[in-house]
Image 1 (tube, rainbow, N blue to C red):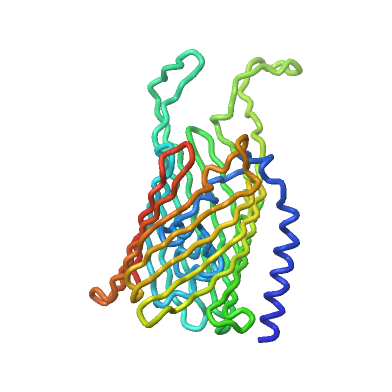
Image 2: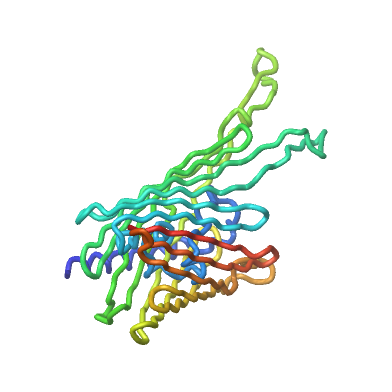
Length: 346
C-alpha cells in the first residue's frame, strides 16, 4: 500500500506541474486537431456537469477517467449513448467491456460525430454545385483498467482518430491515462481522481482534394498538379483533477458529491461541480454546474451553465441490468443539448 500511495503522489505532482504547461489555451481556441475528442458522452455524468473525474465507473468512465472502467459491478457491460449537439450535429457512443478475472477489465468503444450533409459551393456557383459531402469523424478506443487494491484503480485508453470529408482526410492516435484513489485521508467514500487526456502527435490533412493545377516557372514541363501542404495541428490535450464524496442518508437514500478542475491547452480552464441523489439505487436525480472564470463577454464559454438529468435502474430483467439516463445541457446562443443513454450489465 505504501508503494501505491507513493505512485499516486507522484502522479498528482506531475499533473499539477503540467498545468502550467497547458496554461493560456484560449488564445489558440479553434485551432486544434480532432476537436471531437473533447465532446463528452454519457448521460449520467453530463447531467452532473462533467464533474465525475474521481467517481466515474463503467463504460462512461472511458471518456471521464478510464481508471473507473474496472469499478463496474458487472462482469460485462454494454452502452449506447446519443447526444443531440448544436448546429444539427450529433454524437453517438457505443461501448462494450468484459472483466478478465483478476487481470482487470478490457473495453472497446466507438464515438462518431455526425455533421450531416453539406452542399458544395464555389466562387462561380455560390448557390451550390449539386454535390453534397458528408464529413466523417470517429474515434475508436481500446481501454484497459485494473483495480490494484481496495483503494487504487488505474486505467488507460489508446484511441485511433479518423477524419475525412470530400477528398481529404487525416488519421491520428491519442492516449488517455487516469487513476482513482478511494478513502482519501482514511475518510470512507472520499475519493480523488487524476486523468490526462488526448496526448499524442500532430494530425495533418492530405488527399487529392488538396491538389491544384499550377505552372512551375522554374520547370519546363508546363502546367502540372501540385499538392498543397496542409498545416499540422496538435491534439486538444487536457489534465483533470477531481474529488468526490458519497453519503448514505439512510438505507434507501444516498447523495454523491463531485467536483473537478480541468486545465485545457486549447480553451478555457473549467471548474465543475455535480450532485446526484439516488433512491434505492433505482431512481436518480442529478444536477451540475460548469464555471469558467477566464471567460468574459468578448470570449464567452458557451457551456458555462447549469445541467440537469434523471436516471432509472431496472435490475435483473431476464438476468440483465438495464439503466436509462437523460441529461439536459443548456448552451449559450444555441439550442440546448439533450443526451440519452442506455446501459446493459451482466
